[in-house]
Image (cartoon, rainbow, N blue to C red; front, side):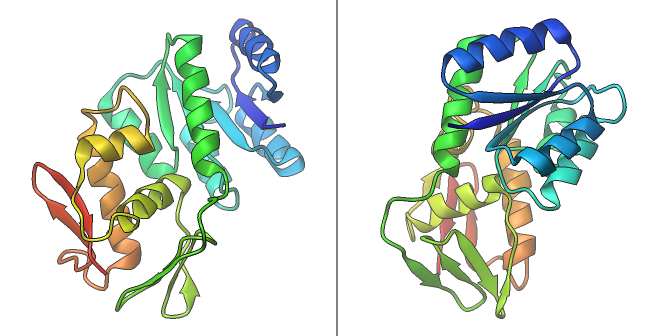
Length: 225
């Protein structure tokens, strides 16, 4: 059973989400503030975190930072903050998806299903791809550089895996956004710029002049080994 850590201080919303999630077979742990969330995450090891940014004791971005230090599961932000810079900040810190309030329950459930599906172990045979700078083990979901493992967030891994599985081919911006973030994100190309910059800093010998993660301006991205 998929365990969800719900971090939200609005009691009525917590109650509604608990009912809907449990009805659909999810197990739910709820935390009303950031410190409780970090404690519950350590003790209960959730499969997905659903997180409000406006918490009473700390900003939700601080919670994301605290979780990302050791927890590699999808984090979906629920927030009334609509500004693009708030979304980029949360995603830049390590969130995998961003849902603005008010939201439809069907949309949230679809995002949850997509997050769980992307985080599930790959059923395909293990494939190792080597470049001059780093090695990607698709089966183990592991990247190494100079013999050292490079930690990627779930979103960074999903982008890299999609590009690698289409080696040499152009993967369009819309396809990347749709497959990694889901429907409704077709125009959020700033997300791609942020995450590709992160991947290049972690993997490319010269991030300013990438050799493996190539941008095709206005069209998409391509992986070249």
